[in-house]
Image (cartoon, rainbow, N blue to C red; front, side, top):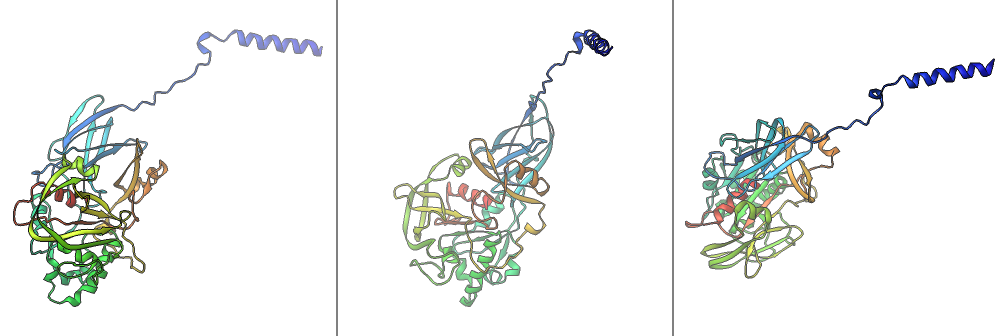
Length: 392
């Protein structure tokens, strides 16, 4: 009887199997993971719409936080491949903390959408200050781009509460001698150290290297009193002579932004600050003399010092953006500013918080041995100085 019951169960199971149709046979499900994309084209312009901006980062993210990125050419033109749908397009220079624009647009499948010039203007986020100089007027270049800068004095530099409201400070050549009282210098040096260590950026030209390494109007040796950059990192002496100096752009990003990699710089005054020694691990050379390889334009974001207090600088305390480092295909790293709410998702994909190089909190220091507004024509150096302004 037991064997009969087992036989009946076996027959019933076979009958169930024979009733299954071919259409019910299990098949492998294939999912199309291809992201549909379209293109956006446009021209990055200065805030007043008069100057094209080369070397700007243009990017967006898909719904899985993969980045789509491109760079504007020397005429400001770009074409960005982006995921289909409603997107926020970011346009930034530098790491995006001082100049950036966000555009809401719709990307269409396999189509190119042309963004208009009003959408692609690069906006000023930073608060900018400058000191009056004897030979330079960087403020003219700033204003010609449609951006705003506030005039301050050496007395203001001696007050940390005053300069802490700014993101960028421009030091025109000869401005240090505008201080009638040299007793201000120690406070100025200490405050600039606090400013840069907490994320503020500065630019100095020619004689104003004295703000960095010490001295007054100019420096004549490698260890003048004062300054805040260690003497081991930089020495600049007033030994240059007048004349045309052939120069080479030494940075690929700068060369892309400019559209050229060689130029002549007119040193039309009797003497200028020549960089005689520098730490290559600390400074990046952006422009150099073609014949001697001597630096003419350098920058760093590696400034640190012990005992410097934490001080909120500029717009940083109120910003809803955070600087991150993202690695693109080809192992290319870019520093950009993204909405803070997206940071955890980007970090999960390998991004790191902070810039791709240098301490997280350090701002930039730019120095040019050439002027930004010498007695008249500065030629291609003017375009280089536009880059400096927008990438601090």
